[in-house]
Every structure is written in C-alpha cells, then in structure tokens.
Image (cartoon, rainbow, N blue to C red):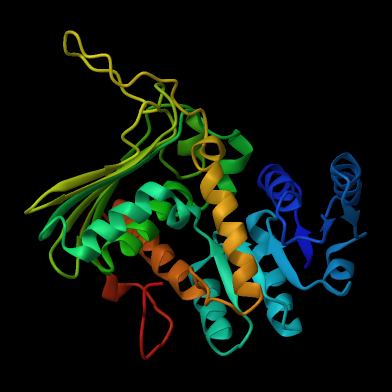
Length: 342
C-alpha cells in the first residue's frame, strides 16, 4: 500500500518509523505544515515527501494517517472522507464536542472507514482483561480502578490547547473502560487540584484529577490522572469481580515500590513515557489499520467510539467546574439507532 502521513512532530515521526517497518507499506509519503521538517524526516528515514497536505491527499495514496496537532485533525478527516480515503486519525477527532458530534454524523453517513488511535485497545493486558470480563471469569464486576499518571508534565505551551487533563489524559481511560466492560457511562463526579507548576492554573487546567464513573450496570470506576508521577510513567487498570480480579500493568515496570520488608517486586525499571509503555500496541494498531483500509475488518475504534470517550471527558470537566454529579444525558450525543462498542 501507498500510505500518506500528515504530521511529523513527536507522535508523527514515531508513527513514520513504525509504518516504514511494516510489510504492508510499499511507500510512505509524509507532509507537514512545516514543509522543511517533513522533508528532513523523509530524508532521514528514506521516505517520500509531499510539499503540503493537500498535495499529499491528491497524490494517489491508498490510506491516510493523521498525526498532526489537534487543530488539524477535523479538517483533514473531512477532506479524507470527501476523497474516500481510508483514514487512521490520532485522538482527539476534534478539539470540541460539537465538532466531534458533527464528524461522527459525517463518518456514520460515509462508507469510508475511519480508525481512531486509542492504542490501549491493542495492548495485550487490556485485551486479556476484556476477555476475562466477557467470559465471566471474574464473575460480576463491581469495581474498577483506572489511571493515567505521566512521569513529567508536557511543555507549558501545550497545556492551553490540550483541552484539559480529562480530555487529554483520562480520555484514554474512559475509552478503555468501555472497551473492557462493554458498558456505557451513566454518571460522573469529578474533581481536580494543582500541586505543581503555575501554568496549569493559568490555563484553567489542573495537574491532578480524579473521577468516579457509574456505569449503566452500577459498576463503580475510579479514574485518576496526574502530570507528576515521580516514580515513572504509570498506566494501569484493576478489574474486581465476585469471582476474581485482574490487573493490567502489574509487572516489573510498575512505578511503585513496596513499603514492606523483604519485598523485591517490582524489579524495574519503570517506563519513562507513553511511547515506551505502549510501543507494541502502537505497532499492532497500525498493522490492524491496514486490514481496515483493505476492507478485511471493520474499524476497531470508530469516530463514534471516540465521541463517547470525549463525552465522558466533557462531563468530567463540567462536574469539576460545577462541583456536582453530572448525568451523561446532559452531554450532547450524535443521533444513532445503536452505539455498539467495537
């Protein structure tokens, strides 16, 4: 396949390296708003180069990967759908809920497949947890703990355009909770605090947050996020049931140390960032995208799936701001006869 990649920043350059190593890719063509940067990445990695994003879309590509900054996602996805090009798009689909709803309706009306990049759906541990829930191995699931704890905060300039900690970090937990349980969120109650740099407060954001989600079957989910996990990058999930419990991320990379005498677990080292933690999952999701583009499988994470995670994040921001529980019925949704979880 001839693949087009839009965006060669941190995640874009990372995807370029991954895509270039996949057998399904015959040619990888890159483009960026910064044409000089795209040309440099192409030269450094032995890739093809398009002078701008419109030229990339018009160059006869078989599939399209969007890895630009968030403001570029929605307009590029609209162009790809109009051109009928199967597309992989990094989250979020758009910066606002209204635009995400609109894009969901547009994607639903199109025959062109779109795969949204929630890579945790391809992590071995999360998939094992999903199987344990679906098979009944855990009995009745009653409580879940999910967390996204970054070792260090991003640059101050990123925070004002990030959408806030729930939309930027916890949205991954919100998506994976739906994926693992097969259940929708019914209500949320969220809060947050600033324990670190002043630039979070200046942007109206928090650097530490927590939310209690109640799922439609009554399962309680506690989701926490922080930009300051000094022990290392720490992304985990614990699923507790009447017949058993299972943990994702419980291995030697665990960013915790025991306070008990004689306990040597975990052996370390901890992960430093999300790309290190989820490298196999990123490879697996891009490999799956080629099956989507070839029509062999349906999208494993649709625009509608991304909308539901975004709606939960939106509800958490509203709850934090107004200091009250928020029902998901208060958050706009795209009309549909079904909201199947991929």
